[in-house]
Amino acid sequence: MKLYIKKGDTVKVITGNDRGKTGKVIGVDTANGKVIVEKVHVVKKHTKPSNTNPTGGVIEKTLPVSVSNVLLFCKNCNKAVRPGFRFMEDGSKVRYCRKCNEVIE
Image 1 (tube, helix red, strand yellow):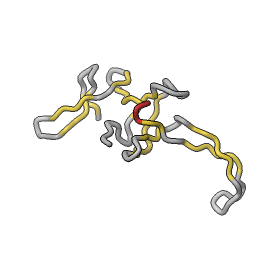
Image 2: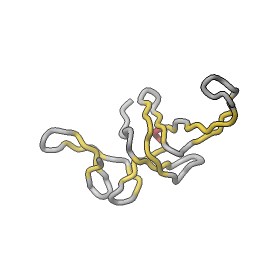
Image 3: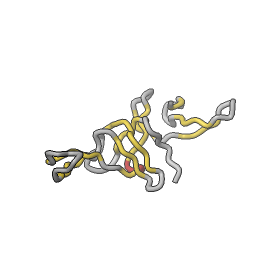
């Protein structure tokens, strides 16, 4: 599955309980079409004591979000956009904002 979101991008959540939040993409799962966004879709998990966590208790874990529920956030126009693609003179393919026509890095 081709995704237009990469690790390190800033995205805005458009649906779900975390609608309106923005965050940085920590990881991308291209096989399932999911992204892990910092401080979005955080759940509490109760764990037993183990060697890695000797006290056990409640830990917070970030779960993946479907890529269809997020949009790329353009820093130039401060809006969530679905990016377009264009080829530069040197033949490289870049993403650009469809609202302000600037290249997204």
